Length: 297
Image (cartoon, rainbow, N blue to C red):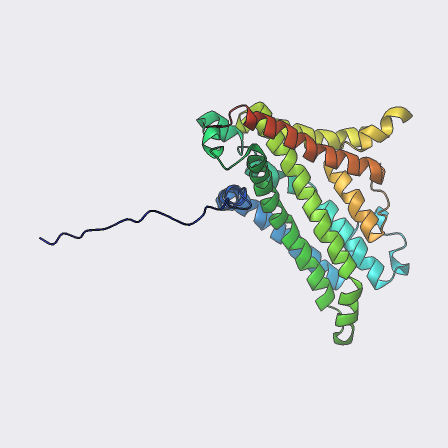
């Protein structure tokens, strides 16, 4: 019988703390989020919607808008019409985008609490801040993928259907629009992900988080509509409670577009304040919860 002897030499090199320690948490959460049936089914709906918008953009862009919103479309330029289509596309997906964040992020922290796996994440050098970043960026990345890819595809299709001699000038003119879309997608995904992860931490159960998230998101939209009949002092705060509307207000501001008959809209400053508060509150709640079980030895 052959015996193989192995010798081990003491490591003499230095040690280096890994950078971006939250990335493995993000990668694992992204893989888990995109593997589920819910993501595939919602993704199919996104594909159907973007194909419909692409076909109508080619045949008759004005037909995309409800009749009450078509006034004046005949007098706008092709550039203005493209920006209006992008703004309306964001409105068309408003009901689906939060569902992606909900299904992906509802169990992000709640499952760790239920299985008592949270202390395993916090073995040094992973910190509570790393844990929060990993847990919030995973559903944000999945939501941004589901929302952003159709958006960018629509922009690309709108450029490619132009006559060949207009493609490059038209694309150049709409680079700012593409930048606005990317920023809008990122802000929307981060806001929804922050809310669902915060609720996952506070509620501690996946189903309970879904119910609470639906109440926050869709309840906020109902309060925005109710603001039309609310006292003046309450109207602006109520308008800003709809996260989806807040994100779309920023998109409209960047695109320099106003969609008529869109209902009450918050001021840009109110929208920014609410979106930023969601992210900051999420950081506070998750980091504080993680510190309560942090492994220090």
